[in-house]
Each structure stands twice: as C-alpha cells, then as structure tokens.
Length: 263
Image 1 (cartoon, helix red, strand yellow):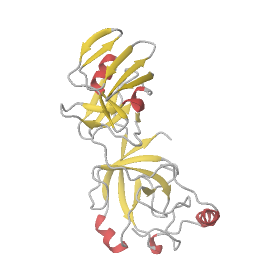
Image 2 (cartoon, one colour):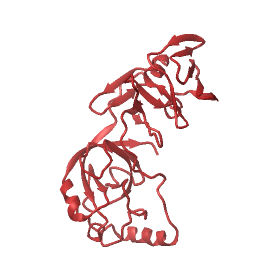
Image 3 (cartoon, helix red, strand yellow):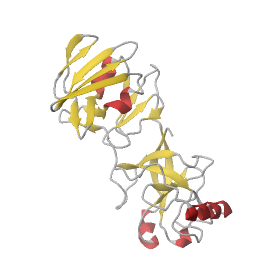
Image 4 (spheres, one colour):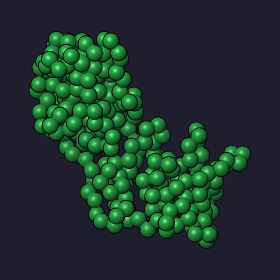
C-alpha cells in the first residue's frame, strides 16, 4: 500500500534512533492462539505460552496469566516430574497436581474430566475446572474461539473490533521516502502495524486475526501499533511484511478482527 510522508516528527525520532536504539518490548511475531481468553472486557495476553486444546478437547491455560487476574495467589512445588499448585483467594482454596484427575476445592476432593499439565517449565490448568470452582460464568464465542470469563457476573461481548487491513513493505516509496523504520524509530519487522493514532494510541499492543495471506502467521499474531501513515485513517490497520512492494499488493484490502491488549 502506498503510504504518505510520516512527517517531521518521524524524522526527529529517526535521528534519535541513530544515536540510541529503541526496541519494542517484545518480538511480536507469535503465532495464533488455538483458544483466546477474555476476562470481563479484556483479552488476556500470553507472552510466551499459549492456551491450547488437550486430547480431551479441554482448554488448557498457562496458570499464572489467568488465575492472577481472577484474584488468586499462587503457590507451587515440584516433586520429580509432577508439580502441585495451590490457588487461594478470599473465597476458595484449590489444589491440583499435574497428571492427576483428582483435585481439592476447599479441602474437599473432586474429580476432573481432564488434568493439569506441566510442559516446558509451565503449568497448564483446565480452564473449565477453574471457572466452575470459582463460580465464574463462561460464554464461548465459537466464531473467534474465544472463552469469555464474566468475572463480575455480567455479560461481556467479544472484545474485538472489525478493521480494514492492508500490508506494506520497507520500500522507501511506502515509507515517506525514509528508511525501514517505523514512526517510533524501531526497525520495521513482522509484528509492526501502522494505525490512526486517534483510533488506536501509538504503542498499543494488539492481537489480530482473520487475514489470509502467505507469509503471515497462521491463525493470528500479536503486534505493536508503532507506525502511522497518511492514508491510514479510522478503522484501518496497515501490516508491515517483509517482501517486495509488488508481491504484497496481492493482499489487497481484507477485513480482520483487532483485539486491544492491556499495556
């Protein structure tokens, strides 16, 4: 997509970067999530371990990122290949052990239809068990594979917006004649998107899905809104992609879903 001049402020940022490098807080090329988790109105960000469906088709979630947002403190201990996890809040105490279908809720033993798992240094717990033990209603949005945890007891719709998406390259003609840097001075890379700052503030973390183009992560990806463009207005996201300007024109204009993540 042809992008207009980024402006004198971009030139100033670019000059600053030549003196001291600015790096985005994470490398935003993570592949799509099998399942997404929303608590009330906010999508949960999983920086390095994603939810997934286990062999029983139960949603397994990295324990810390979800339970802390549900108000639980977490203690765990590892014995051999097993990890025992205890969750506590002002209402419940829950204990699970990886690989075991038995758990305890407030010192009462219960059976689960699946079990917690320990993989690559992360403990995953069955989302359904945690929400049922915590009396939290869950709404499933099948079109987005999104589990919405209504922690406050109220209904919350899926927290995404529909945007028009295009792609751009590092060709100077698409970057106002400047080099391959975004508005904030970072080198352009997969995970960079240009936005209208009046709609999405610069520096925002996002999760996008719904595009269809070879070279972009299958399913969806985390991105940072660190670029702008004169023709990027309203509900429009311009996705940076490595490749030639001519090859990327095949992307055209696509409708995608954009989730905003807490900074």
